[in-house]
Length: 161
Image (cartoon, rainbow, N blue to C red; front, side, top):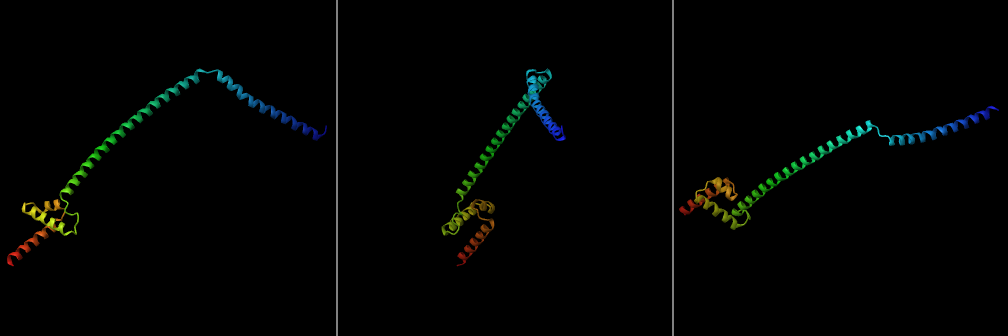
């Protein structure tokens, strides 16, 4: 036998040996898995029970947390409803106040100016302080003072003339 044929024989033998090893490696885990599947040892069973108990505890803790979050959400919703009702009451109060003193609806209208003037004069005759008249009419106390001063001048001119 020459060197080339020996080398060829060696390569073929190595390939057959490699193929045999691969086949054995494929079959070996299947055989060991089947053997392990049929036998459940006490240690694995104990670990499984521990894992199951921990899972139950964590599940209960999770549901308690969800319940607590739901209760807090309900409390927030109730608080928001209370705040909403307070705002609604304030809006109604503002609407009532603006309806009672609807003097500034058309500021350029001559009738409105006369109404404002008459309202201010009536409040003054009834003895209301300037600040309260300003609050009721929506006119600044400076403007009211100016109106009062103009009324005094008007009366003086009327008396003199």
